[in-house]
Length: 187
Image (cartoon, rainbow, N blue to C red; front, side, top):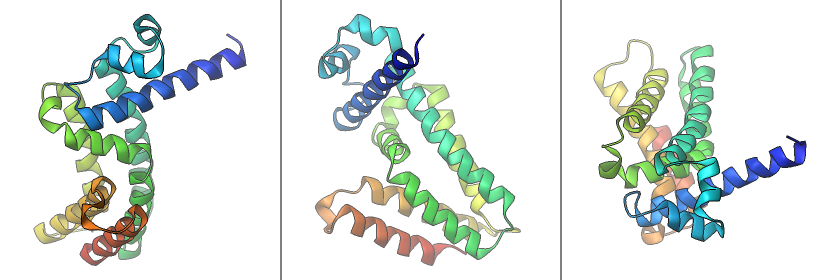
């Protein structure tokens, strides 16, 4: 396969992922069909099947992207001394992740939590990511309160990404407010 063909195939996969993610988030995972995704892309279902056979394959590929970024954050945290400054930096980096595709994937999963419960492997990946992030962010000898503060800080950052304009301000202002709240929560 030529470099151009490989790049084009990758671009098509990314377009499929982007359209599917938007549909899953806005319309619901259960209410979205592969036919609708193909129509939005202006391709045939057969062309879509070349890249992904099922909606679950698309979702798993998106979760894989999110997991890669969260894994990198956890690896960085595990390589650094457990300090308050490290936990604050984790919150900052998580905010950056949450503003990108992984944040959109997390938002999609949260909005489709009930529908995705039937997808055991998908649900397990999400819970594993949250648990690993929370564990890596907790201080050494953390109390229950410390662990809860860390989880609440993480959720504040993630929720800011999915909260709409109904609370006011721009997306950047909401993200900054979430960073401030999360920083106050970090033990």
